[in-house]
Length: 199
Length: 256
Image (cartoon, rainbow over all chains, first blue to last red; front, top):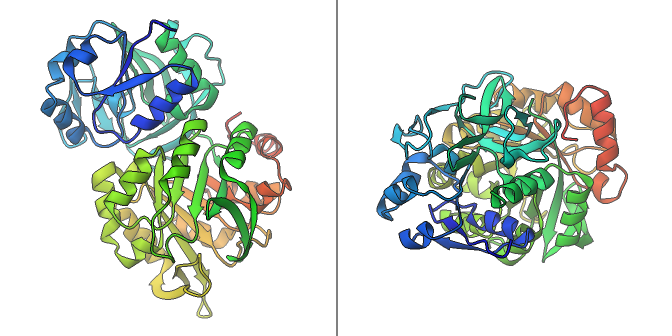
């Protein structure tokens, strides 16, 4: 993977370090950048993110990155909030998102069985054959922690069951998203990150 | 289906993992990174590190070991100990922790919970509650439990505090049942079930694990989302792969 040039978009999320360390464990260095040219020139772009949709979009707007991100043609991966920002709109703070992937982000409706946030290891149900999911078996679990989600739909490659089917892995053109945290999902997460870097 | 989590708890003092009985008499168990790696390899679902002396000493967590752990560990981990403002929390989260847990500082100043939730989102704000049944039959919270000389009994009822911390933005609650802690006679099912009934966020049971049956009970009878334990894991009395097999055989969903 020597020719890789991975850039982590600085969207103010607190999991930046964890994602960078996860890549390091795969032997891949990554630069954290908020610079439009640097991001546009990378071979792979990762948009991490922990926090709320409103401040996340605000940060991208202030850094002048909205159009840059929309225009990327190399493989892009949004993680957790970073995935949600790829969609059209989030119910979290009534936020207009990047609008790259069709769909809406809505609050998870809790009940006596389903606590919110959806927190912990849940199984991935693979729905589509895609290079991103190579080697992901029928009993693969990933670590989720989120209160907002996208319903499983047209662009969903893998879903997870939390009363309803939630989009866990999505892809639309060159834009990929993971609602869970691959950087904290043990061997399954490492495999998914490796798959992404191989695209 | 969301699985039930097994969480080894590592009490940290002066950069080493220690363990006491009923919150007293701490002995060194091992190095932080060594133990973290061991539990990760055994299939722990998450780790919690409590810097047990930070809060009583009025200082925050040492971020150097948080960073060391974050580099090698690929499962989520939570850090607790003396985090009393947004800046201290940011330090720990930026060092690579996935969640921060606050206990005594939240009792000192409950609006800290609101501030942390606003700054980082509820998903990384865990509130730890040390609770004890008193002579009148009420469960009440304790403060500064890391230091027997400074521990304080508060008038606050545990169930009231559970409701308040959720309203303020706690994304998860860890209930340490102090009567049960370290004595391996089982989780305090009655108290955990009472807390469960007013807890809509994930609930982590803590204190009292002694055998695999205790874990089965806390998931079945108290509907806890996760079970935390220290001594039974540190001593090797319960091995996580064996425990997971036992739970799976009893139809409790666990991560393979």
